[in-house]
Image 1 (tube, rainbow, N blue to C red):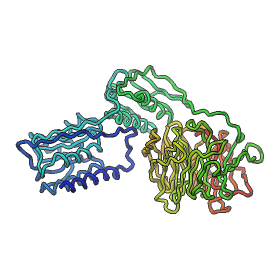
Image 2: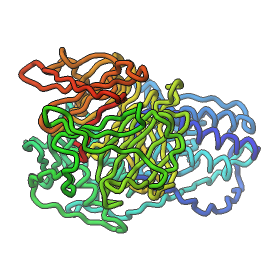
Image 3: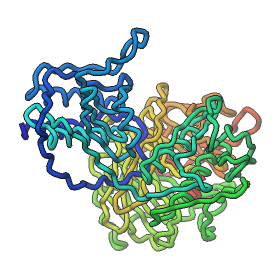
Length: 605
C-alpha cells in the first residue's frame, strides 16, 4: 500500500503542474514548510470507506479533477465499491440529503466543504470526518494545498480502507506577513473592482494585487465588475475609479473612502505595483499602510549617464559575414561608422559556440555593473554581455543547438534570451539567467515555439516575447539567486507565420512593432494587432527580421535578401511618416551581410 501511495503522490503533483496550462500562477509565493505531523491514534470506532463516492466541484480545475481520479483509483485498492462524480444536484428536487457516503475533494458545494474552507488561508489544508452527515472532507486553501491534503490523508489518515471516526486535522501554512492593514482595515475587508469591460491591463492589475496579497498573507481578495460592486471597502482599478489621468501620469490614493488606482494603458499596472510595494515593505511581518488623498504621479523613466559616442541616430548591424557588431550613425546624409565590436578572448570571452551567425545587438545600462553594456547573441549557439567602452566580458552562455536569436537586460541584473529551437521549433524557449557573475548559468525557462524576440516593459515591469505565432508576457521574480518566470498572458497571432521581432515604438508605452510574415503594431492593452496602421501599405512585407523605431518617429525595416546567407541582407529601409503614408530611404552597406539592424539606444522605450 505504501508503494502505491507514493506513486499516487508523485502522479498528483505532476498532474497539478501539467494541467495548469496558461492559468495565472501566483506571482508572490511563500514556501510551504513541512509541519510536524502528530501520530494519529485510532479511535475505538473506525469508519470503512467502502462504497463511498468521491465528489469534486462541478467547476473544479483540471488539476483537481485529475487528482480526484487518481485518489479514487488508489483508495479503491483497499476500500472497494467506490464511485466518482461532481457536486451537481437537482435543486428543484429538494435539499441535499442530510447523510451521504461522500468523500469531498476540494471546494465543493457541500456544507462540510464550505465550513472548512471558511477557516483556511491559501497554504492551509484540513481533513475532517463529519459523523452526523457521514461525509469526509479533504480541502485546501487553494488547489495546490488540496493536493497536499490528499497526500497527507493517504499517508497518515488511511488505515486499511478505514478512518478514525473522530478524524480532524488542520495544517496551517506559513506566511511572511501575519497582519496587513490598509487605512486601518484588514486587507481582506477590501474588494477589487474592475470595469465591466476591463482591458488586459486592468485585469492584470487586479491579478497582480490578488496574487501578491495571497502569497504574502494567505488571504484572497475577491474581484468583481463595477456593476456588481458591493458596499464596503473597495480598491477601484482603472476606469472603475472614474478618474482621468493625463499621458505619462497615473492616479493613486484614496477618494470617497475607496482606494483608487488608475492610468492609461500600462500605467494602471504601475499604480498596482505602487500599492503592493507600500503594503509589503521588505522584512516586515506586520504591516499597516495609510494612504492619503488620491494624487497624480508622473511616471519617471530610468535615466542614464550621458553617452554621445554613437551619434544622434545610431543603429547596430548584426553582421554575420564579418562576425561583428557595426554601429552606424545615420543622422547625416551618409552613414558614419562609429563603433565596431568583435568579442575577444583577451577580454575574457570564451566564445564557445559564437561562430559567425551574429543575430542581434542591444545597448543597455547596468546599475549592477555601473556601466553601459552590449548584449549580443549568435544563433550558432552563444549569448554574451560586454561592458562598454572596455569591451570586457561580464557574462556569457553557450547554447549550442538551441539557436538563440535575441537577448535583453533586465533592470534587476538578469539576462533574458529567446532561442528559436532551430529546425526543432517546438523546442524553442525563453530563459531568464541570474547572470550574477561571468559564468553564472542559473536560469528559469518557459517553452515558446520558434521564440525569436524578447523585450522588457519598463512601465508594466514584465517581459514580452515573440514566438512563431504567439506573443507572450511573463512576470519575472526579483531574486536572482533563484530566477522565476510566470506566464501571465498569451496572444495567438494565427496569421503571423514565423514571428521574428517585437520592438518598442519610441515614446509609446502601449504599442510595439511586430514583424515576421508581415509587419503590424501590437496593442498591449487590447491584445490585438493592427495591420492597417499609417504607412502599412508601404512597410508591411514578408521575411521580416527586424522592425524598430527612433525617437524622431522614423522606423527601420530589415528584410532578408539572401546576401551571404538566405536570411541575411546588406541593406535596410528607413521610413518617414506623413499622414497615412510612409516614405522609404534605403541604406546599403557594401561588404556586410547582417541579420538585424537594431536601434542602438539604451532606453527600453
